[in-house]
Image 1: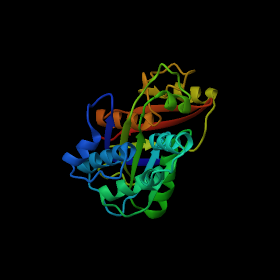
Image 2: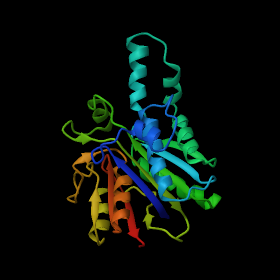
Image 3: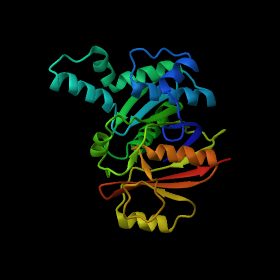
Length: 267
């Protein structure tokens, strides 16, 4: 399966010192009331993408995330389970994934198909597969946003993600404008639905040429890994190498199972 990347946008909390909520209000003149940090992050990344490319109102919108809006879940647990109070209305609304999708779609001015999907493994790659299947039917373009928000204490997120306590976790949001058409594309991205064993992925990588990056979960692989973590790191890696105009092979892993992405620069 192959999709073409027409535009990208990225934000990482360790690379930019930005108050996202203030930036939405000041730079983009957007109303941030009744929204929380997770939604703010998603809308912020979408606005950055909008600055870089033409958005059609019928573009499909897909939002994915590693663990979702865990901040609102923790607040709700505090109110309801510990303090024995009723859940706050806006926390209940913001707990729903479709609420995030609604605010992002509204900020972009799109009214096409909108999907919020989350998986406990390979969530970015699974979203690419869903988009490929949908675009083959609709013949439209798609926008894919990947959101990861770190809340305090970050030990909770580390336990949920199953990573070492010493690993630094980040907030990040990354978007791609995707199409089946090559015209004006910055890069192509290839992927498949197959899950590979360690032995199989070794054979594939041994026959690959070019830059190879792997997730921190790929402990058995001796390729370069990031020293910081967020669940949708694959999305950021793709964007980073699109901007570098370089090819990339990215390997992800979950419970000894492997998936692979192949990025090819077209400029």
